[in-house]
Length: 471
Image (cartoon, rainbow, N blue to C red; front, side, top):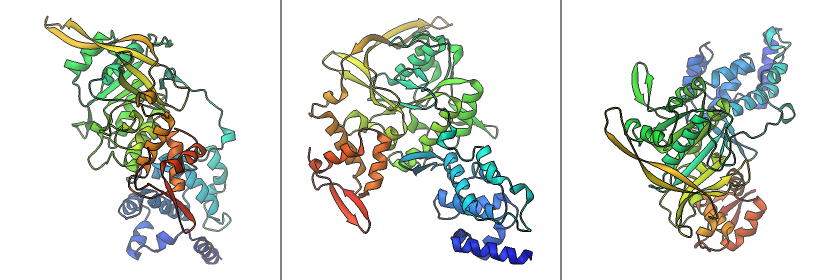
């Protein structure tokens, strides 16, 4: 009787096509997978040529086949050695974090598995697993989630629990501005526009370019910081060895430092300097694989993570599309701030390039001034500080001097999107949603006038760049 039920169940799975990847493996590997060792399972998965999410899918299938609970499957895969660099999967036009994607796939595949819970080889504790899917948070329905208001470190400029990018050319004081914000947070002092903080907050600064003793600490002193509440991170201790902070290797170390230290502001200056060799920051997939876990850390800890970014050398592009090397930078951040020199007012300005969580705040004028002090040895220390001087009328789109500001943004979005050739229209739609510069309908209205062509291949439409861009 038992063998008959097993045979029926296997046939059901074959009809569903759920075990194709597993059954196509060499018998020796299948035998290893059938041993009760998770390490073998994960190592073999990571050694295949499949993408990380394909690896995860057939591991999920195998574990379901062998009566592992959904919660157990999730706990195994969330610490798997594969997928650490590629943790974002596109779903319905939005990027889902690795853990959320895993939860959804486990839930979906469990329900599609058609397991015979009455068969003789079923484990009794699995009988309530369908209920468990909802109870342990494996899946989340919109109706089950209570809406939350947006929280801010600095209202309309730096949201809490997510990523902010501060970008600009060298010499514009990006790092000093970030340190100035950390200094105000350390005292619980109002932000430059008057936004009041409820209490003093702890911050952490990971800087690859500035040393703590001769640059960061003097700048904190110049900004009148409570230095006890501002920590610097340069190295982590791994197996007794101090190693420079590196991503994605040290995401767990960063997360622990933020949560245990109750940091409410984390400054990474600049992100590219902390990225491991082999990660191409000019490729969307690679950079999103770095930004996604940072976003997850920010959400879990409630901290504002501010990433300092340099501008690329595309002088003919607006600042928004000069941030880093990939469109993935601006797609991941909920707020993108820029710094520039406003020739009309003859002053430096901090302004908003992108704001997904609020209306764009006004630009603020600032200057960089010299500041001197003495150390405990009586030696003179010279540094710089930020001095704010009110609201500016600066408009980054008007700065381009190229007419229709929205047209300029759309043109530069399409140039980046189609630079390597044809892109499926649906992918363009998803990338546009990620950037948030305009609606899909608005993009379509500008498409023809910019010379972008549509090409149909089979049942799918693709967009292709023109022979020469129409400006």
